[in-house]
Amino acid sequence: MKIVILDGYTTNPGDLSWDGIAELGELTIYDRTPASEILIRAEGAEIVITNKTMLTKDIISQLPQMKYAGLLSTGTNAVDLAAAKEHNITVTNIPAYSTEGVTQMVFALLLELTNNVARHSNSARSGEWTSSRDFCYTLAPQIDLSGKTMGIVGYGMIGKRVAEVARAFGMKVLFSKNTPLEQSHPHFSEQTSLEDLLQESDVVSLHCPLTSETEKLINNSNIELMKEGALLINTGRGGLINEDDLAAALNSGRLGGAGVDVLSTEPPAADNPLLTAKNCVITPHIAWASFNSRKRLIEIATKNLKEFLNNTPQNVVNA
Image 1: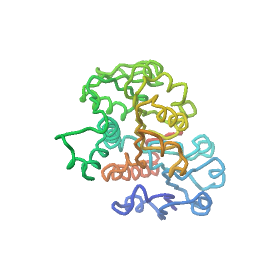
Image 2: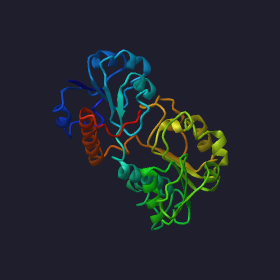
Image 3: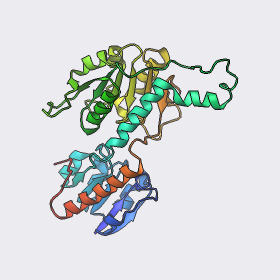
Image 4: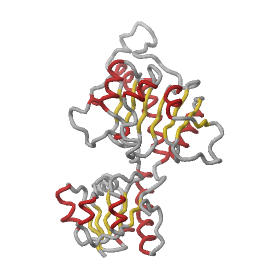
């Protein structure tokens, strides 16, 4: 059985092992695969594994031997799920492998916006503290999280974990979600509509999937609902934000800041407006990428494939 991993480098740049998958068939691993090479590299493969390399409807229709598409991600937008189902291809994803890492990044971005740690460190190291007339100085206001309201859009495992940490900081937690609330939600979180959440939150953190309904969810209309000076955090998908609208809101001061680990196109174009927007902290999609998270990812990907081969598939996203 031929197994192809189209873009393995970001998941495993060399510090982990693919041996568990290699034991299941004839494995070929590519660090990266340009769109023009997908068909050539995946030809004849029954198992195709991808992270961000797109398996479109057109690509899927030209790979008649493919029976299984394994996503190396929680998000599913790299595979046309409807086309895969039409061609009897099972698609699986990797749930819950990076909950702690993403939660940590949410607060790393938020604390950078509220405390400007890097800016103050650079100032001190450049000599400004040495030459200061006072024992301390601030280059930007220091903002307490305690007493503020955190609004969480999307309330899956990551959203719930973010809520727990926000509460530990003394924040009130609101959340919105499209599906009915489970009875076991944390008692300290309050479900509300998206509109009310945007109006009442000092910090809005995005944790919903990217779908046709959520694409460009943060746009001029919804930004107008947000508090003046509110902060926005996005560790979900870049496509959740209309980047032109967010950049304009940051540059005008309508919003107080944004912290984003994802952009609509990755790597971004040089003219992406958020790269030069005021008070915008950007990290290169690294919230998921700790060693422990990537190790769990590969373990789950291996188990997904094993269960598929045993005719007991798990984590199927196109059933």
